[in-house]
Length: 333
Ligand SMILES: [Zn+2]
Ligand SMILES: [Zn+2]
Image 1 (cartoon, rainbow, N blue to C red):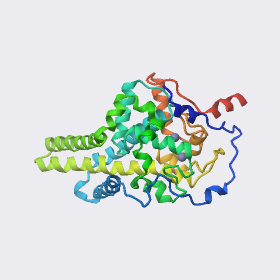
Image 2 (cartoon, rainbow, N blue to C red; image 1 turned 45 degrees about the vertical axis):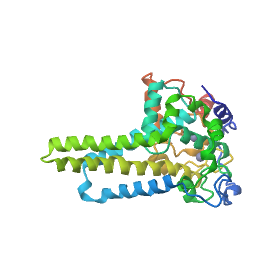
Image 3 (tube, rainbow, N blue to C red; image 1 turned 180 degrees about the horizontal axis):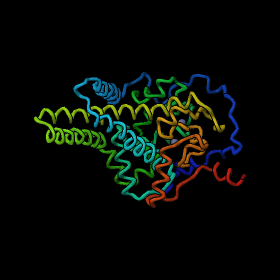
Image 4 (cartoon, rainbow, N blue to C red; image 1 turned 135 degrees about the vertical axis):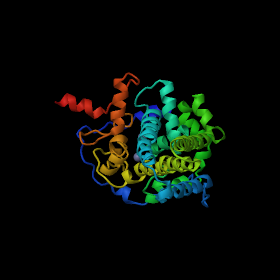
């Protein structure tokens, strides 16, 4: 059911169908102040300020040859698609935030659990931040505009206390529709989502331990194989997926081209478009937020959209929202 927030969000300025290239707007060259709701003096959000560097350090351990296995490498690459593309791009972003299609609850919840395993907070929190970003893009209330500084937009914002994040009214205003579902409410309580992340990491280790022990000679073979899956398939994959998502917040509001005049600094960035499996066509997305495809031109390849098409073809999802510009282009021909 569409929320007030989504109705608001869908009332974006009509897309300029002539797809003119926007001129550089000097407003977006001026530095932006931190959101007013950021605490002053700055208070550190310790849970993030500790866990983010720690998981980076754990990811760096893949340089230790003893922790290597080809299975771990494959799980890392596959995991970026399974957890990052399906969990974050498809579910948190295109489904839960923008309602670009309709999925049965069992599928929606399953995909949301994949998103939880990227350690990018709960669906409700992620969606609230992102809807806020769209509402205030590149103005002071935007929680992560890179116009404050690149590092702030990339990950700095996560490590500083912002009163909005602790305000019940904030969640009520931005994600009422999400929190109506007891499944998402449960994930909010007692940091249950972090427990789920830990359980999935443990499962990676235990699966590797069992297989390694069964196929090796000693229990130590199991430990080595289990740890290789944990460090490559969980910690490294988590960090890489973070930077993919973070680069959409930072890089694509600084570098790239614009198909549309959207009134903020969003860009389409070729590199981010490809490594994020479609999220980097960010100016297109700001112009037409509900569209489940972020690539609007034939060369703007969007693997997440191809996944949506596949799910639609199988009948699993329906009411897929296509970019408005496609129907206009078709009428013009
Ligand atoms: Zn944006
Ligand atoms: Zn969005």
